[in-house]
Image 1 (cartoon, helix red, strand yellow):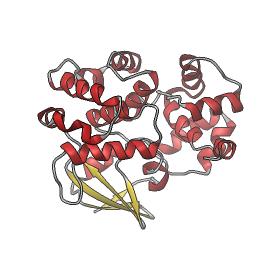
Image 2 (image 1 turned 30 degrees about the vertical axis):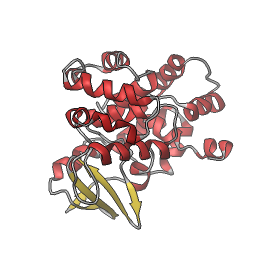
Image 3 (image 1 turned 180 degrees about the vertical axis):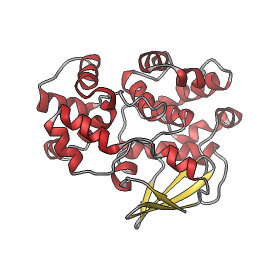
Image 4 (image 1 turned 180 degrees about the horizontal axis):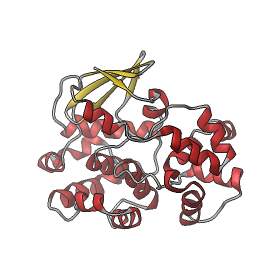
Length: 270
């Protein structure tokens, strides 16, 4: 199946937004819902194997986002981001399934991208439905039904909060549908009430899980970038508000370009 879309798969799937994609040769292998999906970029977008529903892929890659308009707007706000966006055409924000996104980012605290992917895959291998060569991301109930096996996942201090997240989501104490209907500020506020969710994780989930493109997550790399490029220092709130005010309704896209800034890469040697 061919998807016609303005997208570049390498920066979109390889930038740490989602953690179940693997580059194998010229294809990206991942799991969407209960489908193992293989994508290969072409001149018109990409060819997809393993998923027969174009709607699923179009939603996941936010086909409704007008990249030209988004890049124009954030480029008008800042010449440096303009240079970054022009060197990375076709990068898109993904729209991930909210439960999977939230559960994944609860695991993604104080650890690098490689370790996050390893923990997520371990959780899937332990609790998820067998799809053949890979497994689906587990539902809260699937986790709770076998929670005695959680030590096998080697989640460290995240283990108890991960089980708590599954319990509260399964019993309705965490209402993801209601959170998804909230505006950005309320969405983030409700997410922060969840054990294991701080401001950065809340912004990541708001951006990648609930589609609030104005969210501007700040980690160590973004913090360094804001300091070096714009002279901004201070608390998480100060830096995140700076990003939202500077880049407006598409601050999340600007954040992704800044995250992969060659300036920061060269400075840090990452």
